[in-house]
Image 1 (tube, rainbow, N blue to C red):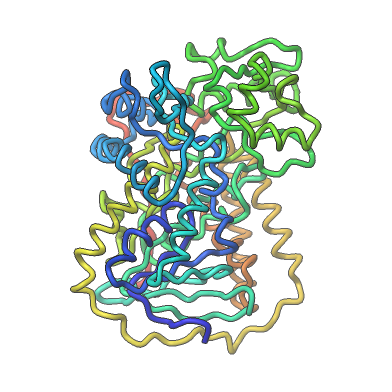
Image 2 (image 1 turned 45 degrees about the vertical axis):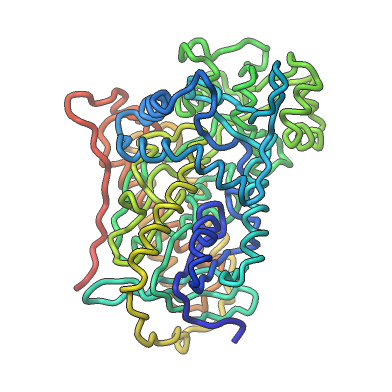
Length: 533
């Protein structure tokens, strides 16, 4: 056996949330396992460009950050959760610096060295702490290095969870069945506490800024285990993804617009002034819909983001990653505009949790993008996501450390039974279903929706779900099959949440109900799984 099968804490996911929690728990003599579906650096955190929102500027305030977040969330943020998160901004940045993360600094006129702060859409002040335009990479590499050095943390790459294991009465988490995709072997891992930190579900769409790992695994696992899911209709589309036939999922950071980048049509004319007084600094849902509108209205493949009016040195210093990546596609952003389109970017809904990241199942926690904490409401404000990862990793660690002494070790768990399945000779079924799912989600459940489109999408999901279930029952599991099985469940959850919301709010825009319903208090969309007793 390559590893022991019993741990105090099993963390599923190796991004900013999962590794932060592991490090916060590791000094307390606990045995911790962290699973990564692929390599440790394939989590969404690694690809985050913009930064982390926190109040540092002398002209800024906690109250202003709260107000901006509530405004972006379109009436569905939990004010207490927003305040909790925002007030931990500075301490979260301080903790990351203790872990070795180096943030971009600047020298003031008086010679003082301080953090350089960017401004992004929805923020009324400069408050984005960053490492050039590759903040997530800096955070990921530092946390991975610290975790690799810690004796109490075991890191397992290429391990994909098949199913969570729970007891029946009372319902509590016991562990998980896990596929070692290198050896194609399913093992049982028992744990007193299990934490979902698996990220979002944006690969449900044909175009996404996310890595291939963002297939909603934790959301689907929690749903099948019996957890409520909330607000899945609020899928955030980032307004500016690089549009190029050879470019895959490359995000053009919101900071480009924060530093003066202008969105323009192919003839060079700006258009955001027609949609919002804040123009390029409007929240992402407004900017994404504006771009989508102009593309459909004019029959164009993309719009353009132009930062070339800024000095060349400024662009190279502030956006070195974007500059180099675009240069590989013969786009010199110091001299020409960047072709961009909207793409699925962030899952604002997810597994319903409380202020300590607890789910409906005892000793099962969810942190990061997989969770619906109440912070984002109907639309996440830029750079609040990494902050949420850090704050709720801290909250979960506090609760776990308090409860763990009273949590009994799990009983003996039977091994994974694959005696009645065989190897598949029809892998094309998986790739075909994957492609079909993502295409109709993009066409029918994208930036602009209608009841008819949602109904069509649900019919397709039901058909695919049955086909995938039959395939899953007859053949040995593979990582691709597990992702597809999870993604079709998440797609259904997105559609069902969207069907329940009879209004347009935040990221959910429908032509059948184009106005926001202000006749009653805004409510979260909550789905409860039906499970046999």
